[in-house]
Image 1 (cartoon, rainbow, N blue to C red):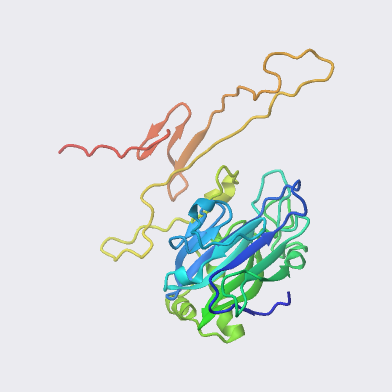
Image 2: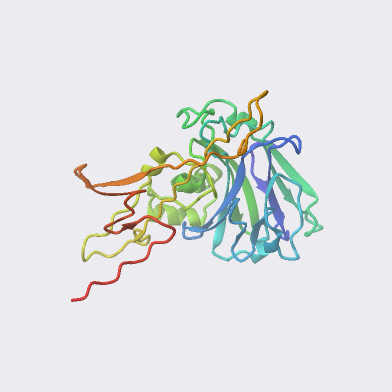
Amino acid sequence: MANRPLVLPFRGEQFSFSLNYKSSADEVAQIDLSAVVISRAGKLLDTVTIHKPSALDGAIVTNKDRAYWSEDVQDVVGDDVIHVLPKKLDPAAEVIVLVASAPLIPGKANDLNSSSKLEFVVSYPDDEDHVTLKNSQVTDLKPSVSAPHPSGSKGLGNGQQSIIVAVAYLDQPGWTVRPDLSTFTHDSYGPLVPSLKEAVLRVRSEAGVDLDAARGIEAEGLDPRELATFTRRWEDRDLVEAAAVYIPPPPPEGAEPKEHAPPTKLRIDIGWSTWKKQKVEGEEEEEGDGEPENTEIDFALIFYNLAGEEVQQVSSGSTEAEGVKVGREYEEPEPEEE
């Protein structure tokens, strides 16, 4: 597909976005497609991801869990598919940003160029039959992610971890899909919120479409530290990267709180796995061979003040400190009696 906008039939009952990255069923690739919905006010309205298969009361669903499908949803072949039912969308929804991401995996080179192919497909009906998804348009994403990212790499891959594939926007009377193809070293849309909003602004500056969302973003201003919550379940993370996550400070006493209030509780999950004991050829098999080693691991979580001085810590041997508790659940402390 040439990098030009695709105008979808405005009476269409469904359009679908597919990401295809496997040449065979045996191929192992870790890439996912997310959709971030932006409102007419220029704010994040909802998302669908690999672990959030539905948005806007089922108006947007993925192929990962059909329990969220309405009877109107048509299946589309693809490795990762997002279905949109435009007539069921919240009236506030004006933009859908499509992002493909490859997770950073410690000890393994995994990026958007790691798979044998990387195709983005838009499936849609025609002007006469508004229901059946007869048409499709394919974009080969490989040329956009094959070279190393100019900013370098955070892992062992080429640094091409995420790409804003396209921006779909409501341009009355119907939807238009415009390729974007900006790439990033972040491995999810979570830290890319300012870049997603910049992609919306480019629709106006480069395509001449005056979206309400673009006006809202300009009026509010871009916050370079704005984040969206995104977690891949059981995903290994670099603790150095996790430590750099920005947590907004509380407002000064007497000041009005911002729209996004600072967190009042922070939960850190730490897990580990151990190598299995390997069987040695020629030796007799012993009980426990091939099973995980029973390894005890000690840990410590150390707290510092702004001067860099250690103020307290919790560890495997000391599980409580002021405002901190190690365990499955943290209970708020009982108020002290006067």
